[in-house]
Length: 482
Ligand SMILES: Cc1cc2nc3c(=O)[nH]c(=O)nc-3n(C[C@H](O)[C@H](O)[C@H](O)COP(=O)(O)OP(=O)(O)OC[C@H]3O[C@@H](n4cnc5c(N)ncnc54)[C@H](O)[C@@H]3O)c2cc1C
Ligand code: SF4
Image (cartoon, rainbow, N blue to C red):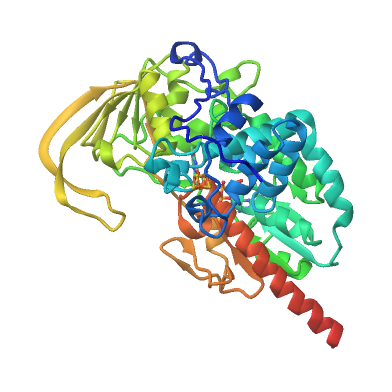
């Protein structure tokens, strides 16, 4: 067990590339811990007992956080062993730690109630998780663990189809493969990963890391069929004839648009299109890659979630001057704190309490400005706790040659129009076992929640895998007893 040392109040910082350097490329901003720095940060953890530790309660997949942090300290003289033992603890609950360590909003989850916060800085749990996954990948320790795990898997002889290779589908697939099911993922795009591949940019989450985490699932036996659009290439009814159960993890990839004059002018993108071009199709490497993207000199991004921050920071890397326009105030910005800070350091300007009412074009049909109504905050808050706002009747016009709309997304119609599938407000309805209204069909992630977070999608994937296992165990036993 880790020996507790003297209380160290300050967090060990992770090195970051300076803003003036990083705005010229798409390389990762945060460089992560070395082993020495990770151990120094791990030593600050008070090792609260697992049945009490508030960090575990705050993690949607309940990783034994003091458990994995403790291993780094316990085996500090043998870095490879320390990481292998820590990774074993993490993998018991989370198969994509290099990803979640980078993109989870830890400040609202595991780190939120960390008891160290009462006397100093909270433990940097996300960066420690990321360190373990990165070190294991670089040293081949993850492969070693897989090599030990795979032969122990007992095959069940039943097949499960997963729709969508985002965090929800990948997690469900991994858990089911570990339980011995024959798992096939159907993915519409030409690459698996969902938002991790097409949405979140390289400078926050390098694609080689996502690919390597997905590769490990393949080594567990998961098959991935890309360019397969369920609802077109194959229907859910057809999948049910071939498979014993189906999991829908098709996300919420349809962008919301703004119903205002001029919305179809040239130079106006949805964040989805803009980020897909930049990330999935690597338009930032054009002409080495053949997908272009046109980014002007002055860009307005509408919205203030993670998607807006990613679009703004990507546009900045094309040399543009970027403004984020948000209809509410700073306190209601929903993007992660780290991303907002990085955006500000990179010179992105924020304009609050303005709402677009018209997109103004030139004689060639290109956008040249956006007219906004100024908004006023009220004292009341809406259901999500955000401050209500009203228009003031005053307007402001801001010039721009590129506009990116990032005001949210909803689930894909192709799936939700499946006959017999119960849907409310565009989201698939599931029971307490993650089963939809169609027996044997389960769902999770953004498809049931609307746009949420990676770790919530993964938590759903885990819960659904457990429920599918119970469902298929009964089905198996029923057949055996028949
Ligand atoms: C730009 C951006 C930045 C974000 N940043 C963060 C962040 O920093 N932290 C965080 O926690 N969350 C973030 N999020 C939210 C997070 O990415 C999502 O909540 C999460 O990816 C949802 O996972 P999912 O598996 O449900 O869906 P998705 O990741 O959307 O994956 C769904 C997959 O299903 C596929 N699919 C859809 N329809 C079909 C079909 N008919 N047939 C076959 N396949 C289909 C899609 O192609 C996709 O690959 C961000 C989202 C965006 C868009
Ligand atoms: S709450 Fe904080 S101090 Fe306690 S175990 Fe978790 S990370 Fe360590």
